[in-house]
Image 1: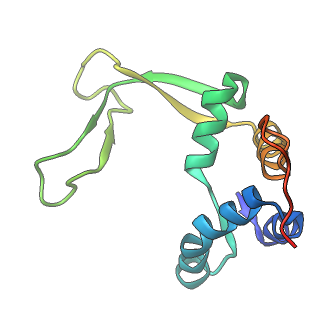
Image 2 (image 1 turned 180 degrees about the vertical axis):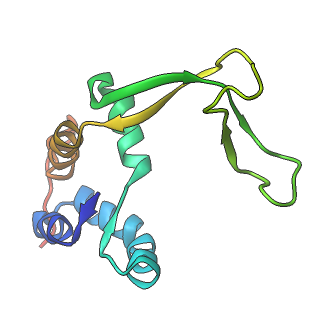
Length: 125
């Protein structure tokens, strides 16, 4: 989770990358405050990209059979993971059940500070 204090730290970075991260997470933060009563978000897309770039971020990974429901009115578009092997089908993806918070935050902060690319680092005024 990226919480209120982390968001304040990210805002203080004043880089284009940090500004983008704050902007794309604005609505989900509002939702979490209103519905869950917390100013924190899981940032699943950011965690996923962190794992793509560094497989060590994924701590617990298990092969599972997964489908995306594209027919049911109830769960249309939902990702269905056969966790209990009810279908008895061969696993078709590796599912990450736990990620390293330390490695994820290190990679995220490095990128948001503008250190993650070869582009010149620019701070906003």
